[in-house]
Image 1 (spheres, rainbow, N blue to C red):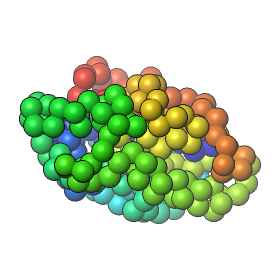
Image 2 (image 1 turned 30 degrees about the vertical axis):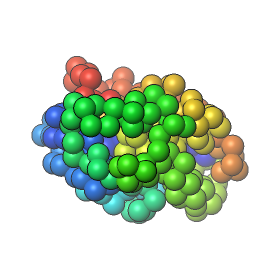
Image 3 (image 1 turned 90 degrees about the vertical axis):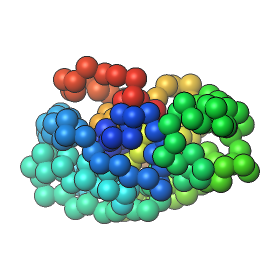
Length: 218
């Protein structure tokens, strides 16, 4: 089966360069809706059995719009395990402010996941996020047991980056080495047993017409 992971559309906080975790949910930008339509159009010839999404509004709305563009009758299930990182004191702060207050934590979050500790800031570590997300992915695989099943999974940039790389067996220290994930991008994994995964496509944005900017990717 194939799992099509989509990051939610770009939001106001994404544009402003703010940390946006499970505790924050700024509005989706108007142009994001066009990009959701482009995702749906790109995927419309693929038959999907089910769609899953984080219940946080930016992911839920993205999932609803993408599914609508597919013109298929696809059930959508919300799973709290697909939420973004809980970011503690970093929530809602600009990257510039965090660099001044918590430079060690910011560097670890971006470049050294194995060194990211939350003693001073609260929230979740990479290991904690992976440990809550992996059972959700395994459940999704169990609930769609046919070899030719395709499913959509709409979630968040940092959480998806961590989980997808973990599913591929990437060591904790190397989780960020494939680079970031852009808003409304598509990453595809394939599995036969829900335990071993192969990468089919990473951070595909070939269908997006908007010129990329640094604030699109985390």
